[in-house]
Amino acid sequence: MRLLILFTFFCINIFAQALNLTQALDILKHENLELKVSHFEVQEADMSIDMANAQHFGQLNFIQNVFRSDDAGNVFGYSLSSREANFGNFGFSDFDPSNPDILNVEPKDLNYPDSRNFFQSKLVYELPIYTGNKITAYTNMAKHMKQISILEEEKQLQEKIYELRKSYFNMGLLNNSLKNLHLILNNISRLEETTQSMVNEGYAKKVDILEVKSKKANIQRVISELEANKELLYHYLSFLLNQDVSNIITPTQDLNAPDITAEEILSKSIDIKQAKSALEVYDSLLDAEQSRYLPTIGAMAEVQTSDDTFLGDASDHKSYTVGVQLKWNIFGGGGDAAAIEKAQIQKLKSKTQIDLAKKGIALKIKEIQTNIKQSNLQIKNLKVELSLAQEIYKNYAGRYSEQLISMSDVIVKQSIWLEDVLSLLQARNSRNQQIFALEKLALLGERND
Image (cartoon, rainbow, N blue to C red; front, side, top):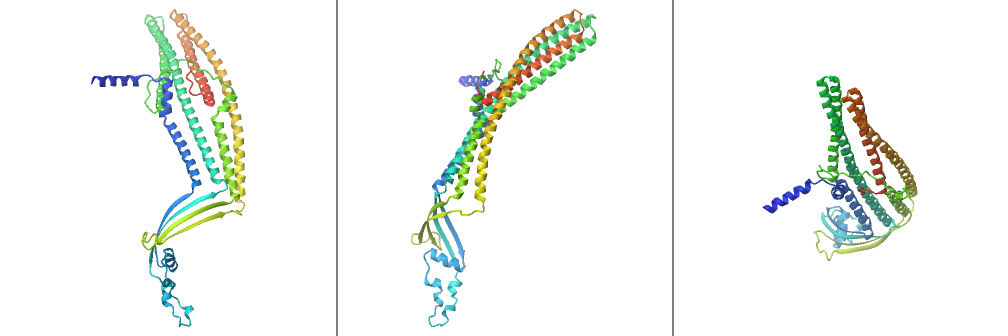
C-alpha cells in the first residue's frame, strides 16, 4: 500500500512538471495525429509499389461456372467440354439410311435437347512476357510517388515543429509582456493610492482619480486579452501534442537567426525535392505512354474439368490449354501520339516548375532576411524607447505628487509606456515569425536556442 501511494505521488509529480521544448518536440513526433496520417500515406504509397511490381508475376485465377440450359448449342458444347458427347448428340436417333431426303431431316435430339447442368472448374494463369516496358515504368512511377509522400511527411513534420516552436516562443513573449504590464499595473495602482490620498486631503480633484481608474481598467483589459491568448496557446499546444498541456517552460533567450546561405537552403528545400520527384514521375509516365507503339506479348495456361455435377469424374474430364498472344496496336486514331505529346508537355511543365520554385524560394529568403534586419533595428530602438518611457513615467508620477503637473500629463506618459510595451511585443513576434519561416525553409526546425 505504501509503495502504491509513493508511485501515485511520483506519477502526479511527473505529470505536473512543466513541459520544456525538447520534451514537447519528442512528444510531437510520436503523438501528433496529422503526422500519423502522413505516415499512413507513406505506407499506402509503399503498397502501391508492391501492386505495380506484382504485375510482373501475372495472375492465377480459379473460375467456377455453374450453368443450366436447354439451348442446343450450349448443351452440345457442354457435352464436348465434359468429354461425354456421343452420336446421340448429333441426332443419330433420327438417322434412316433408306430415306432419300435424309439431308433435310431435322434431328430432334440435336435441336431440342433436354436441359442439362454444367459445372466447369478451371485454373487460369496469365503472364505478361513483354509489355514494352510499361510495367517497369508504372513501378518506377509508384516509387517516385512514394518518395513524394516521404518528403510530404518530412514537410508536415517541419511544419508541426515550426508551429510548436512558434507557440513556445510566443508564450515566452506573452509572459514577458505580461510581466511588464503587471509592472505598469502596480505603478498605476500606487499612483491611484497617492491620488486618492491627495483627493482626500484636497490637493487633487476627483477627476484625477477617475482618470487613474480609467487607465487602470485599460491596462487590466490588455492583461486580460493577453491572458486569453495564453489560454488559446495552451489549447493549441494540446492539439499539437494530442494531450492536455497546461504548463510549459518557455525559452529564456531571444530566438537567433540561422547563419545559412541561400544556396544551402535551396539544396535542402523539400519543395524543390518534391518538384524533382514529380519530374521523375512524368519521365516514367512518358516511358509508359511511349510503350503504346510497342507490341505486348502474353502467355497463358489453363487447366479445367467439366461435368453435369460439381467435380464429377474430374480426372477423366480434365483438359488443358496453353498459348502465347502477341498484340500490337497498329492504329489508334492519333490518340497514342496525343498521349505521348501530353506526357512530354507535362515533363516540360514540371522542369519549369522546378526553376520557378527555386527562384520563388530565393526571393522569399531575401525577403525574410530583409525583414529580420528591419525587425532587429526596430527592437533595438523600441527597447531604448521603452526604458526611456518607463523613467519618464516615474518622473511625471513624482512631479504629480508634488503638484507640479496635472494627472492628464501623467496618464499620457503612462500610455506611451504601455504602447511601447505592446509595440515591442509585436516587433519581437514579427521577428520570430520571420526566423521561424527561414528555419522551416532551411529544415532547421529542431533548434532549441
